[in-house]
Image (tube, rainbow, N blue to C red; front, side, top):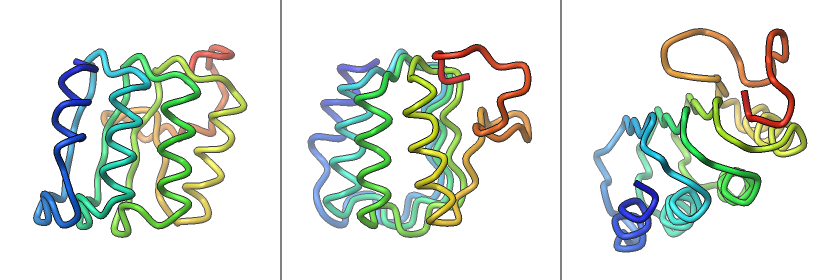
Length: 131
């Protein structure tokens, strides 16, 4: 849940979960508070080896996705290769920010962990739903 993410990620410090390479939080009712806590932990040096992060099919709005984009832009999660973050509740503007941030970092930004559809692909998407 969102509250559980806040508790877990708020407890992480620099160097925490140093061997973690894959984190799947698909469909866990995570909203902005949980995504912001994850972004803050990553910005503080946790999960440095994370290569795959799935946050798709949650309740993340613009605040959460923009916090994650800022952390990534500032160098958090330096080994991240794939981010799955579609099927959330963020706007098209936030989608553009996270897609651009991922492009700048050479991170593949996908809708979900099951398919190959990129988040920036708007074919068959619903406006304003992070899909």
